Length: 160
Image 1: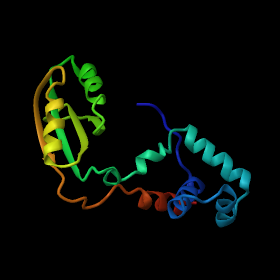
Image 2 (image 1 turned 90 degrees about the horizontal axis):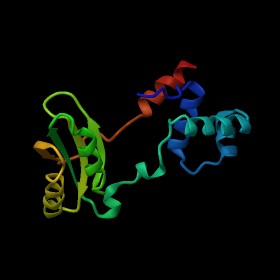
Image 3 (image 1 turned 180 degrees about the horizontal axis):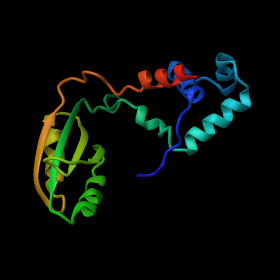
Image 4 (image 1 turned 135 degrees about the horizontal axis):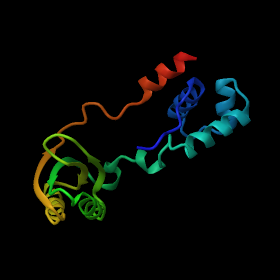
C-alpha cells in the first residue's frame, strides 16, 4: 500500500466546499473559505497529485448510463492465479470495482448491469476467469447509505 497525502483541516474545508458546489472556481472557494486564492490553488493541486481526489467519472451514477442493477460477486480463485484473474476481470467494463479480500473469498467485485438478463451475461463472462474455483453473487436491492465522506471531512475540519 502506498502512502497517501494526509488531509488537514483546511483541505477538509476545501473539499466540503466543493461538495456543496462542485463547479466553484478557485476564487469563489478562496472567498468562501477566507483564504488566499493561491493557497486554494496549491492545495487543490496537492490533493490531486497526492491521490486524494479521484477521477470525476467516479461521481457518475451508473443509472445515467442505463445500468439499473448493482451486484456484488465474491470469487474464490486458485492460489497463484490472482494476477491473471484480476487482468481478466478488468476486461469486463461492467465491473466497476475489484477488491482483494480476506475470508471466504479472494476477490470481491462490484458490477453494474442493465437488468437480470444482462447480469446473467456478465456472470458468464466472470466464469471464464483463470483459476476460478467458486463465485457467490448478491444483487443489491437498495442503496441504504451511499458512500459518504462528509462526516469524516467535517471531523477533520473541526480539528482546526
